[in-house]
Image (tube, rainbow, N blue to C red; front, top):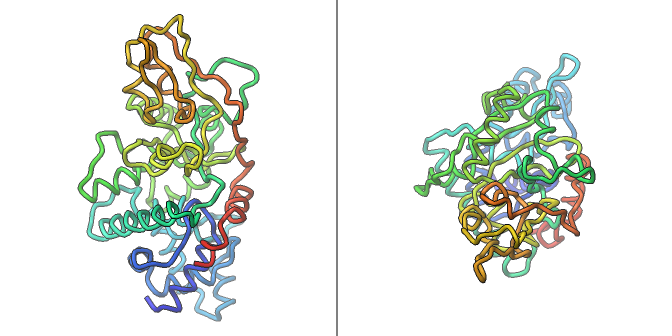
Length: 366
């Protein structure tokens, strides 16, 4: 890819925000060069931040309408652009790196050399970002793009529980639901480090689900099938991680602590992870606890321990996922409201605006 085109693409990706920054380095270049053709990169750099039709873009660049339509359709099919139909016309907008472009390259479960290259470049790029972060550069946004949401049945039956703290009603209200492969576990499997947790348990919700089904990136499923997926994920000990929005959800990832970067970041520091903690925290009823230890193996954050023959919670490590509650045979673990719980952003537009404004200026201009 031409250096000027690469520079312009990087700037465009920075404008799109999302949970991961676009910072130039060899692995980022390799990632972009593998995902985008040079023609696609040129068009991506020209796209405005609001949806545009093929006719509007063709007029802007004085290009051939049918060729532009085919190019935009191809980019949507590759998971680079989000596409939606409105008033008999189709509109396109570039997706953020994450959540968006990177996951879309792998969430079909494809196994080929291109997928392996993307996995290898992204893991190396992630290591580069983490190294910068550890040196105090602050490359990740201070506003999490995702949040943990507790196991629905383990949330206390309390009138004060906020609607955004319950997962199942989001599924009930969704017009479209699509099942996709967990890109994190698939990525590491491509690199020879498989996970023993199921991969076919991640869900897209709403317009994104319809887009994925239209372009072969995901499979539409019923609400009943979605409930079954959620139950299977919980039984496997996976944590629900959703978009950090309250009115609607864009995705429901079911994450492991060994391969999924959201949970890995929380495990390194629950106060500064890529996902916000849930509105709850686990608490032990000492009178009911027998010290059996079932909760310890269930906790993905290693936030539980046995001391003096009783379970105890390390509050700084607990993310409030609720997996320990159902593991307790005596009902000694309860979810309690977290005193400093963050309120999710109303919608994706306001979330992304907050993410972009939270970025370290040094990382924006790197």
